[in-house]
Amino acid sequence: MRLQRIKHTAMSLISRLQHRADQVLASADPFVPSPCVSVCVVHPIEGVCEGCLRSLEEIGAWGHMQSAQQREVWQNIQVRCAKRLQTNKL
Image 1 (cartoon, rainbow, N blue to C red):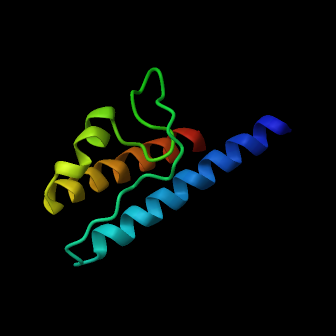
Image 2 (tube, rainbow, N blue to C red):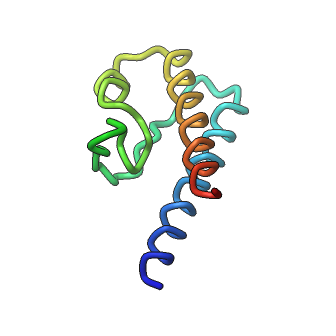
């Protein structure tokens, strides 16, 4: 029961991140917000942050990226969210 609750919470966080990615990518605002949600734990196999689904390279470069590059990161996050959500539906 507890494991199901944890899994549900994790999927809820991924769904919210995916929704946020949709919002950011639909916006024409030149300012692109950081995807960071202050859950800084890197998955040992996937190599992405469990909170924002960015790679260490993407996290490190974020502050030096142009808006277009930051939007590309958000697109990567969208793809990663979709994969995680699809994997966990099986």
